[in-house]
Image (cartoon, rainbow, N blue to C red; front, side, top):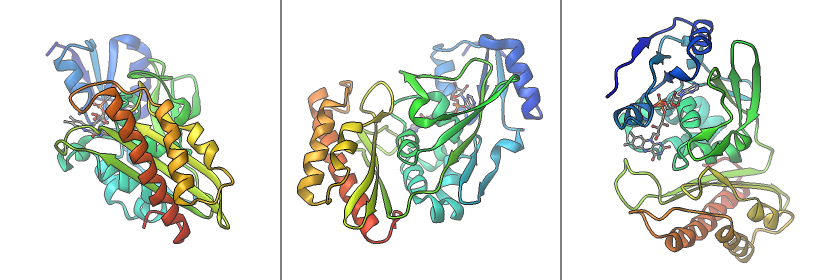
Length: 291
Ligand SMILES: Cc1cc2nc3c(=O)[nH]c(=O)nc-3n(C[C@H](O)[C@H](O)[C@H](O)COP(=O)(O)OP(=O)(O)OC[C@H]3O[C@@H](n4cnc5c(N)ncnc54)[C@H](O)[C@@H]3O)c2cc1C
């Protein structure tokens, strides 16, 4: 491990001032589950590490029709919160499937976005929920959709002096059902071979709107717009869902590794998109959510 100076600001303004002062020489530390590994492997070598744990303002979770999640909320908090289970069950369902309780107890939602490992689970769920990320620098505050947040492998739109402060999830349209399915043939603390989040919004017996996003399927979390387009205005019969799911084969760009070859991962993407679509459709038909 390299040596660095550790700072622990007392509030957001102090943290932003430190980021502005040290720029690319600094890294912020949230749960540490991703960054500490990168430090150990010397893939990042900051001179300053800015610990966020005293920033109580980034640990808030509130709901007023819109769910507002402070960047430091842990995945365990999101998995177990009654507020999240009741109003955005997809997020609780997704966080429940992230690694182990030990990791979920440390890993934060802000970290899951800023880390930008394409194998992570929360980003596809946030994409199908049309979530937005609130980001602050000393000069400005801006909001970006999660869909537009990732720019490349471990890369995002974040500037070196910016901090993620909040994730905002708008209310789902009436008639929506959601699902998150993860193909995890190895151990629980491994990453998915493929993970799929879906939302189906019905208007009567037809699909008014669909969202489909995948993890572990490309260099960034991937939104499968070809599948979404094929579903719009259709009656969601098993054939329609199967034919739409098949279109994801051309959208994914997976990497071969010990979890499977490119061809295998492409096939699994089709299978798991079909399963996720069927689950979300059944939930929409049953009255919504993920119950
Ligand atoms: C063995 C293991 C298995 C795992 N399996 C999975 C899995 O299957 N699915 C899954 O989704 N995740 C999994 N994870 C967790 C995931 O890979 C990341 O480690 C985690 O999401 C990072 O969150 P963190 O809060 O620990 O971030 P940190 O490690 O503290 O930080 C990660 C990066 O984000 C930056 N950062 C953190 N917070 C902010 C912020 N508020 N604003 C700006 N930048 C910020 C840091 O500077 C750093 O660059 C696993 C982790 C481990 C160790």
